[in-house]
Length: 153
Image (tube, rainbow, N blue to C red):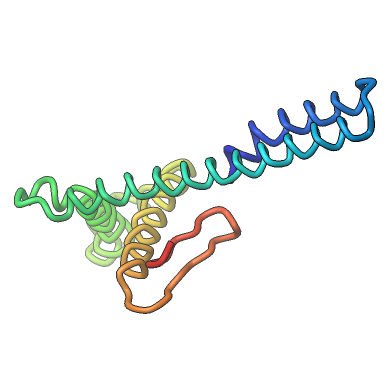
């Protein structure tokens, strides 16, 4: 719920604090605070629904790409990973074994490894979540309270 926690919750808290400063009867203050609590709950549910819809849209896009009859579209994401694997295999295995390097293996910069790790982790995670959402029964994953996916969610 990053949207709710970062944008909506602070705004509702400041409004609630502001109500405490007004000169109202205790009943009016309770009603106003209850109205804010209700609005907070509705906003939290709306933010969760928004996150679920965004994840569903992303999942649908990946499924459409994977089901495409064009091999270029269907294999675009895995081919990036395969090309990277080939480069790593050549650089760290085949070139040193067969002596094709004139010196040491090419040293990749740190940003390459960070980017490469993010690409592979993102692809593997999304494929795993897609598989879990298609399992029978009540299968769910909750990653650190941020990402929730399941076949009944």
